[in-house]
Image (cartoon, rainbow, N blue to C red):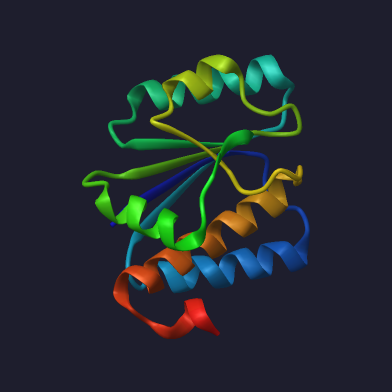
Length: 144
């Protein structure tokens, strides 16, 4: 499995970064993961750079947005498992994603109807990717 995260902003919180690194290490046992970070620079500039990056991508693009579809962990796992190409997740900054970026996505996914910081969204996404892998492989993490 190939996974790429295209994100705005770095993880500045040390506790969140430590948890994210833990999930990345767990995911990397089963998948190759690449993270492309763009600096916070205002909605127009951020979205322009993200759109340029997405134009080059040949993978299945999943944009995270609060107005996206809500999927349970098992449904998400089966959806990700069905994709036969690289999974590309896009997380916007404080201003969210532009309509053009969302239009480029194959799926717009909501982690929750609540709004999260980009740091928390990245951590939650990484945990859900790890959970999806354990569901696909029948490992016990999902039911603990």
